[in-house]
Image (cartoon, rainbow, N blue to C red; front, side):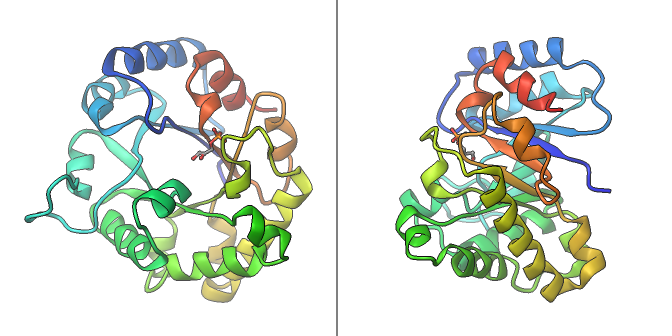
Length: 250
Ligand code: 13P
């Protein structure tokens, strides 16, 4: 049984005060959530105060990025244990925006993923194809290669702490979500890759989130698919009412 995981990626939005307001609204409307996990990933500047606000609540804290070294002369970088220190449980690695604007590759994603695991964080590793890649029929080999590249030298035991997020780039921030059937097909291909790498038992435990224009009106259908185990939500996670509706998917 995989426990669904709904995570909000706030990207470059929210001051500390705005983050407090959003989290307070989420906590107020959350209710009892025992059959699903909820995570928010604010910008670095809001992690510490929101970590305090979320302590001993059902909402876990995640960061949007981590560096692969624990310390040293790396101006601007943040290390895994620093994220643990401010209350993070999860960290996103390899988001397509990091790959596009900040030079992440499968190799750097793999290093960050190892650092996150070694530092006691659970990585949410993002993969996904561009529109031209999908249109040329290359989506599946490209995405499964990203999965393999990101998981190099990750053991079956470590895999238990890894979440994979399939985020087709063309669906991010566009309102143009993948159909539930297309998303399911890719999730099944990702799981088949995990079966090849780790065997069936380990592969069946891994949560694979879908991300890319997840909204209150499409979350139920997406979540009804057998290999879609959660959502990584951008825009719709920035308001309490829409994120709560997504959290409370049927
Ligand atoms: P949107 O939900 O805004 O499309 O963003 C998805 C995303 O990139 C989450 O990481």
